[in-house]
Length: 192
Image 1 (cartoon, rainbow, N blue to C red):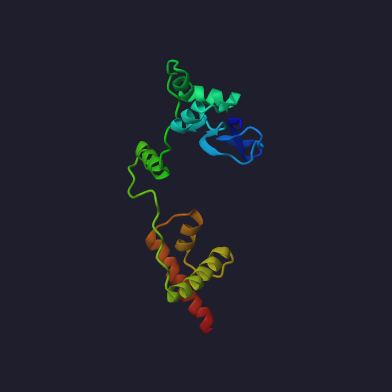
Image 2 (cartoon, one colour; image 1 turned 90 degrees about the vertical axis):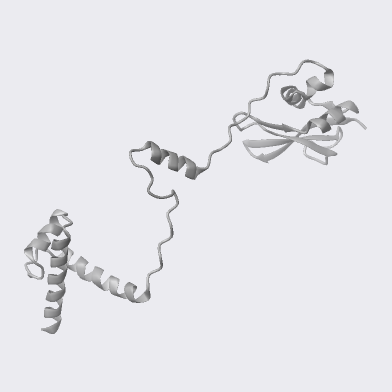
């Protein structure tokens, strides 16, 4: 039986990756294999190559013939030179290990003007109680009604509170005064 060391194609269209396999020369390209001895990902930068050197040297020793692409890969990894007794090639390029996203984020914060006051991950907000949820929409509705109708002349709010809301000022005393006058105006309207 004639044994070949060749590439078995896997992956998607335009995104191939290969397994370096030992197979009978009469089988299909992606058919049944005797043994998988490595991986090759040509689309990565630099290309990812992983070969089980011990098994590759074994199969070369028992007479398996590498295809041209596999012979080139074995020359890059140095396995072909070990088999033939030639001097070793220069070391392969290896991709840098990826850094954690939270580390990158925290480093970017340190590079900016301010040190991070907390971790990069935001804690979950506590759940609202049902009583607070029902009271909150009523306050929002009354506030939005007053904001939507500031120039109608109804006199429901104080002049200072409306002026602060219109100019975008956020003075706490002014906001409290406006809220109090709106709530008193609503009780007057509902009573009358």
